[in-house]
Image (cartoon, rainbow, N blue to C red; front, side, top):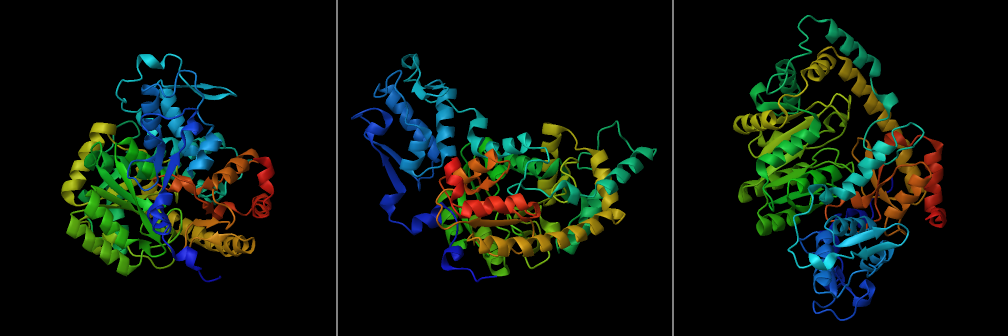
Length: 517
């Protein structure tokens, strides 16, 4: 594999990009004529890519101000989404979200085939203070990919950008056997609520598994959940109030961003390097924003496939102690690991670290079994919150997982999966590079790699064109907490065996899809 070039060694993210360009380039001034108005008393629009306020909010607030002072009058047409995105260096998703918010708030109307226009009755409420946006409006970028998942459930759609293993890689026969065995047991408890913390034998087995990772726990420190997303949601509800700062990986998992926004957090991205988070930027953000949490992947990071090294891990924990930071370590790809990688929870022993695991990626997304490991006080509080928001988790699903773990089926399944993933990566990574794609870094294992074509500045048009040809790809903007155009794409190497995927990637590299946009 070719050595990383200098571009790939740079941290990814808005902070890193800002450091490589003049400060004036980070602020895009929007001429009045672009919005169909001249000489407003508010002055020109400004989109500041380095401001902590999300780009969508900046755009929405400035449009509302102009509608309020009648610089933009009823019936005025807003700049087209494509033009706005191109001129001000934001993603089309960002513009769509801003315009959708203006529609939801009643300031703008959408006319099919014509565009967006200032609402005809907007004068009656234009000077009313901006209402709190509907929470789901904070999550449009993430919902875009989730909707594609929901709409492309049939096997005829190729999914090189998805986040899960192919169905035929999963141990369906073993799961069916475990379910049959469960229904035959006289004490299956299929009609009653489960224990508040979750099925105790599974929690005991998780203690054994965590000890193999050098994380010492007791069953009372483990709370079983409906997958990792419920675990993250419980933690957000417990720690985060409206307006609190939360740090996340940049790039990172888009659904983590959406969940935190849904709970009212202000997100700040910590640029990722091949060895883990950029600790210099991390300290700057800690000093400036006093965040409640830092949510990070240590091992087999999504979307880059890289893992934390020991020096970076120690420095992160030093900063956590200095700035009184709680770290949430999302380790749902733990069982894919074959190479090196440090875990913060192992070094910290659940003092400042809350650890999350899940079987949704490795065994069954349908059973929805995840867990939180934390110090005893936090575990009890999170269990109480689980009771308040969802009563119990599914003991039936937890018993199936327990059977898979204790009867050896899970271990054999994961050995097969890791072998197949290595074979898939050994084939896919050289082929991507041969086509001209640049890898963000050499992944240390798992499903994912992050790659780009040097001549492409924004991967969103590629993803949109791919959908039209039956391929689901994941543009890099989804993995950037502040949005903005980025050339990167996430690839799932387990879904790249089909010849049609490589035919499409070759066409993209040759510039051919541009004619379909």
